[in-house]
Amino acid sequence: MTYEELLTQMSLADERIVVMTAENRALVRNLPGILGKRFIDTGITEQTMVGAAAGLALRGRTPIVHALASFLTMRAFEFVRTDAGIPDLPVKLSGFIPGFLSDGNGPTHQAIEDISIMRGIPNVNVFAPADEDDLVKMLPTIWNAKSPAYTRINTRKTDHEHAPFEWGKAEVVAEGKDVTILTYGLLFEQALVSVEILKNEGLSVGLINMRSLKPVDEQAILSATESGLVVTLEDHFVTGGLYSIVAEVLLKHRRTANVLPIALNNRWFKPGLLPAVLQYEGFTGKQIAEKILGYQTSHQQGEILINEFSE
Image 1 (cartoon, rainbow, N blue to C red):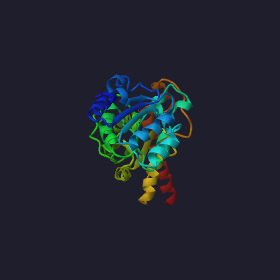
Image 2: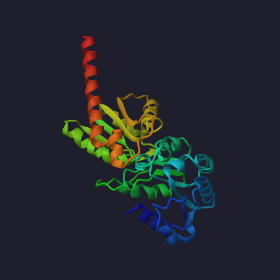
Image 3: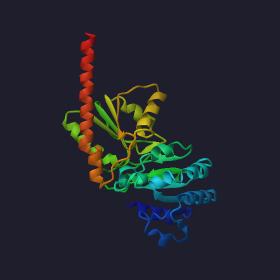
Image 4: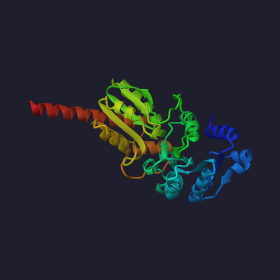
């Protein structure tokens, strides 16, 4: 099932659903003719769209709004915070082309701080599906909830069949003693490749799909620290995203861990076709595995030096 098919099915079954867009119809091209007045295009006016969505939610509707992730989270931030977050209204935000999925666009259109921005608003929940299968399994629960939510929309197809979605729970794909990779969204694809490479190198590797970033599965993070190394992998700034979430959880529970963040270090990425972006920025499965192996090697060498010094 595709995103549009799911939205069509749910909209026809529930007349409270209103589909809105700020002239971003890529995901919902066929819905105007199906929903009629329940499809609203406000034009390139993300702020107006979110404000209107809050008004509809106040009157018992469930608005599902669509815009480019960068503009939905930044241009309309105050409206999400004030009109949806403060009154805790069920406005559902669908952010299109987040992270590296904005491959051909420059910094103005790159949503690589969206997780940080949205999770900072009380009452707003944040989700990042790994692929289309994950997306359609997650959205019914997200859309039926009574609180506002931001979802990084990812309609890429993979061969992985995801487990059913549980609110606030991560998907534990594999457990490992040497390394556990925590990731979300697009980079789940690359993480699968990395896991196989690392296994071939003789490592025991775990993989967790952090599909729910707020609320976050604290137990999954704490369990990951039982591995020798925890890797946070994300197409987001290193500040405010999964790496920061892990740090917050560990500090809260007075735990320490060996954590390697693989993220954008406070810089925007070079635009290009997605394979070129991943290669240039060092986020292909092979490059990720190489970074992990390199870190493992340097860490082990450091332990040897410490032991020698102690003797």
